[in-house]
Length: 377
Image (cartoon, rainbow, N blue to C red):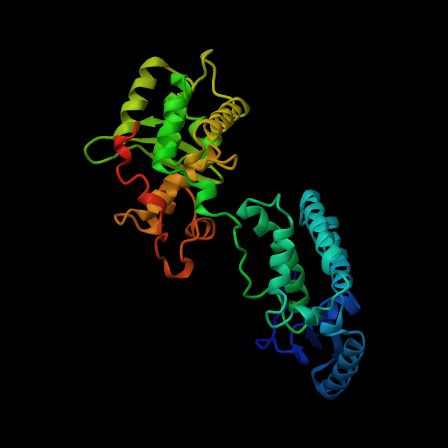
């Protein structure tokens, strides 16, 4: 068995004696850029503490001579971070796709601010530059995309701060704005009814109604429901769709009265296989359903501009709508909504602009939508 070395309790930056190795060491991430390792042997033997202290001081002077601190340029820091990150790739700790995404995002950031120094970003001064960079990419409409982009930059600063290459991370305390408003992603009751009225295919109508009434993810959940996933429940248990593992965790969709009736009709129509199907009696395909929904939205944009529909109203917006309405329901806590939606409280706070840390409901919900959603069919 490999020998286990006893470690000193203190992890402060000073010489420490390791009894099992009978030697003095100092350990810190600050040594990595200079020596390529974090633990440095200073002297052998417990009696050589003074020699270890002298060697420690010499090493610290060497590190400080190569330490530019907050005067480092962003592009130089990014290149150093990517060199380290490539080492992680070579050791098999990360996947190549992740490396390529981070490298592309950091180089994009450097194209804007590479010639600036870290000091220009410190003490909140960089927040406006983070905002400008994210806002410049109009294609980053998804909150998760914007979050991913910022995390690539934040991880660089955090990596440098942990290793004492800079005084502190300029990214600390910054929060990414989603860039979306409720009008962009949530349907009003009038918009929902107009969509129902415009659909001339009963099978597509049933699918869209299921999206609005369950809050399920469009294709990986609702379109994928099988007859065998149905659990009718009883007096003690509600009717559900048990979908197994979705997004890495068990997923259960709870059915309201409307959905229980719809599920019963569909299960009579299809004895096995997929619950939602197209006109040819084959499972709904994501591309086809998405294209038909987009066509309905474009038609309503032309026929009824007063509805305020845009091309950003997509089938996934039905899920946004369900969650938004659930948050406005005083009977549900944000934890209840997260569980029913199959997501986390943090994701709901970030995406739906609840007053995050104070767990308040969405303010000024447009038209108090869907208070009586059970009457909409």
